[in-house]
Image 1 (cartoon, rainbow over the protein chains, first blue to last red):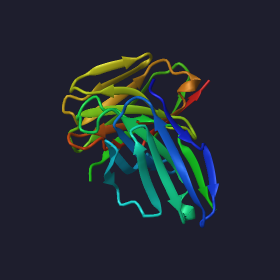
Image 2: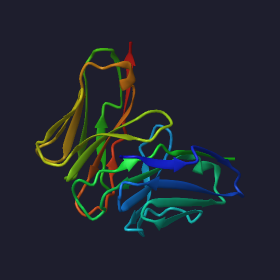
Image 3: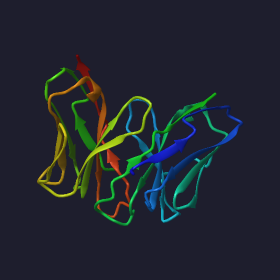
Length: 116
Length: 112
């Protein structure tokens, strides 16, 4: 099973709202990732969790707050977003972030976020 | 920073034709990955390559890890309408903690 699930599929929120995106994998992977993808562009890395610890934060604004409650779950908390934050948000996981090989990432279907 | 050059940017082909796309890098990678993305969906892993010179197939898809470790190509034989989508290459270097460098994508359109 190489499935990563994400909820919700679509989310519309106002600039004053607080919402959360959820991601889950049951492949026993120890690395989980959040990406942001704008139309016609490749995914841009936001955060990496390695063994449930935040290991990479690609200078993401504080209105995005990641959380890794356990090895299977990854959340992205959203607060006071801007319209330019509208995008497809992708979660991915891989087996072991400390391995240089056989560490391919598997992506979820994404959450389409619209900020009004 | 590291960059990947992916070409072509887009392709319009007839059903049944073969397709070839490639990526080149200014840096050496340990891993090359090829993904396909349909509109509104997440990228799906097609092929993973780990060794220089490695040639790997997945059905009608064939990909190779370049000898210099700075390039990779993906071929699709006998294209069909469901091959439509955006194809991304991605490279990973040693010690990157899983950080992938993505190409800008190749948009494939297939005329039935």
